[in-house]
Length: 133
Image (cartoon, rainbow, N blue to C red; front, side, top):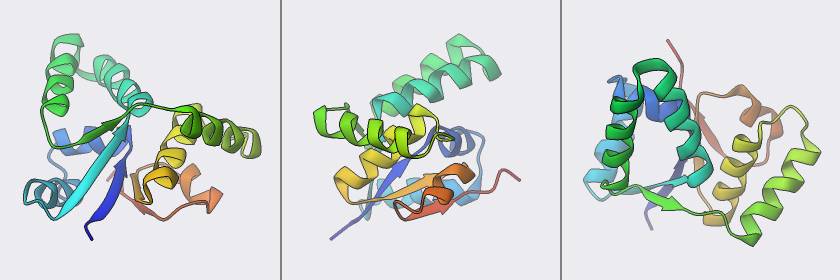
C-alpha cells in the first residue's frame, strides 16, 4: 500500500522554491510510489499566500500546475467539515485551514506534511515537519 500524505500550504510554497526536503515527496509521487492529497481549503490558503509573495499571475500559474499534477485535490464533504469544526473547537489556536488539513489526513489515513508547529501540538495525526530554513 502506498504511503499517503496531505500537504499543507507552507510546504507547497517551499516545493516551488526548490526546497529539497519537500521535493523528495514530489519525486516519489511522480514515480508513483506515494500519493499526495491536498484539501481545497489548504489550496486556497496556498494561492492567497502566494499572491501576496509573488503576485497573482504566478500564483494562478502555480495553481494550474497543481491542478494538472498527480496531487489529489479533496473537496470538503460533510465528514471532513464536521471533523474540522470539532478540531477547531477543541484546539482554539488552530487555524480553520489547519483544522481542515488534519481532518483530511484523518479521512484518508495519511500523514500531514507541514511547516506549522500547531499541527504537532494537537497530537491528532502523524506529521512530517518541514523546516523553514
